[in-house]
Image 1: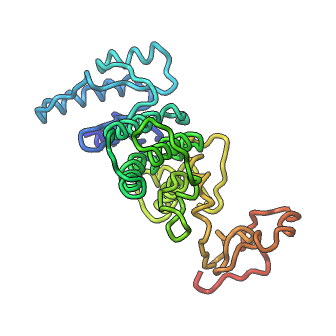
Image 2: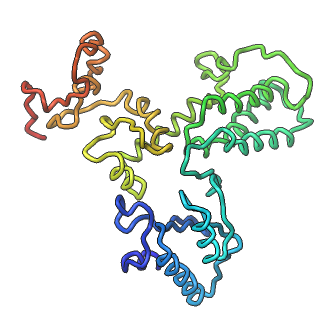
Image 3: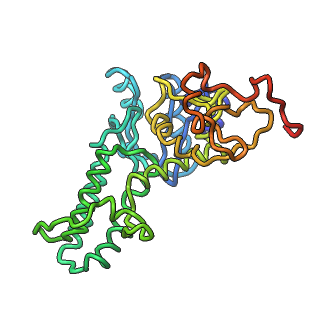
Length: 321
């Protein structure tokens, strides 16, 4: 219904300059977010549309459990929309599918619920006499570390917050649920090494966080969807994953992805065709290491460090390009 309303210009979603008619609805099971640009007339259309849905389906929209969120709206605007939909006014960040959502960068305090989950899990194990090498190690890696797995796949957490999580993990590993302090006999970094390298194989949360975030770059290049369409329209106009650079106006989410791009780019091999996307200095051409790694002194005096292979007069595109 909402899609048809968009086609008939009754509703306009967010970012219509990037996506035709904008993004108007995000839905997973019975959790729904409806997005609109600031337009009172179209908001009235939405209220009528929801009323029609109730009459046709026999279902009821629970406005008492729904909330209105605005970005940049003044107090009168927020109040008007709240009265129109008979909803409470919410504030950022709010939770959707277990993730805090905000149009600004998330702070460490917004993730405190993960610490609370850690502590709640530890409380449930009070009196557990599990040994350090077997039981506690298994609980730590199979249960505790997995608590933050989903959230780390969605956001690059700060080193300060990850250190806070590691503090609780270290404490549980060395002293269990006892209040009596015990010495930490081995550095935590060594414990987080793989068994082949002399560690215990406990997950390194920082590396895990980066690895999970890197997958978004792979999805951007290999899958299609709404998110990919928005990113290509907003950030990758006439650019590639290799050539895109950070800008001041980038969103917090995109800035976080750019911080881990180097890990995604490492180890890539580029088979050169026309050369219109291949960077002379930075890309591993035909399996060779990048020129910037082999000739750093030449790179320092180079005036154009992002020059493309196609722009070199000596380069001739391959017949297959």
